Image 1: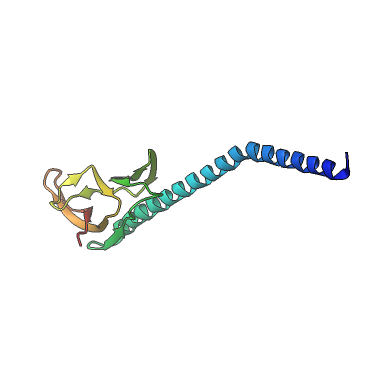
Image 2: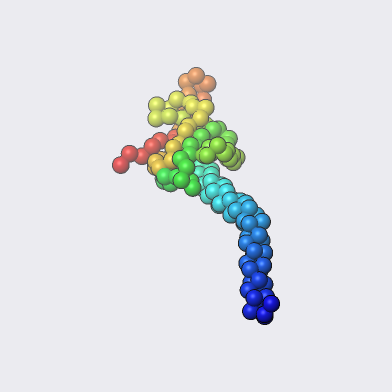
Length: 154
């Protein structure tokens, strides 16, 4: 055989080895890419959760009548979500994942000054968080510090 034929066979072997390496490395690259996407989704959810809990704590630590507006983004990584505010925690659910953060203990009330166990906030909406004084005839507590979270309609 001449040197040109031998050189062509070497190129073919190099291309075959390159293709085999690509085939074996593809799943590893795909797994790393998926892990990075999932990490980004979880980071976005954690930031949102921390912002909401920080806003509630800020309102709770200020004087009566203090109001803060929060605007919830439409989606987290193309998924709708729901936030549940309870007396001592804020929970977030999206894409079969859950997150939770603690807040300072608060008393939640609705617009009629009735005590609530939880309030649900939905993606894409805006809400006002207000610190108010409530008289609770059932518990005989008057001028009780409470948090009112209500949707803002445009």
